Length: 104
Image (cartoon, rainbow, N blue to C red; front, side, top):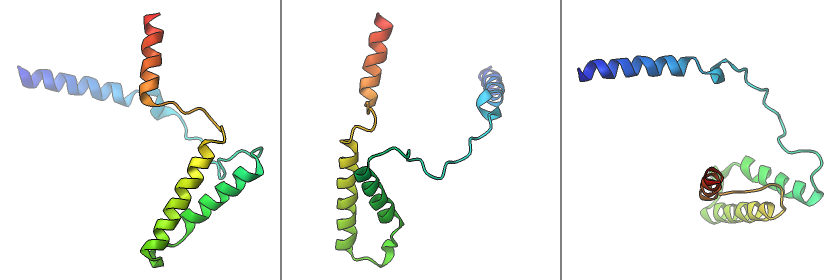
């Protein structure tokens, strides 16, 4: 009895997964630059430096040089977060907002 219920559930799940509209959608073309053109110059400089750090061949760097690059990348990312280029919400905040909306 347990095996037949398992098989029926597996078949039903496979039908649900195969017929989702997400699989039928075409993929959007990948944009080469995800950064909009109307960003300030100082932000563009920071983003360019981040791209340079990512493209550096780190295999021939010393441990201290790698550490300095990581620190610099973290500092740039922190500075970019403070430029108010978006709204960041944590998962907990989203859950609280959804629960409040459902209770109202």
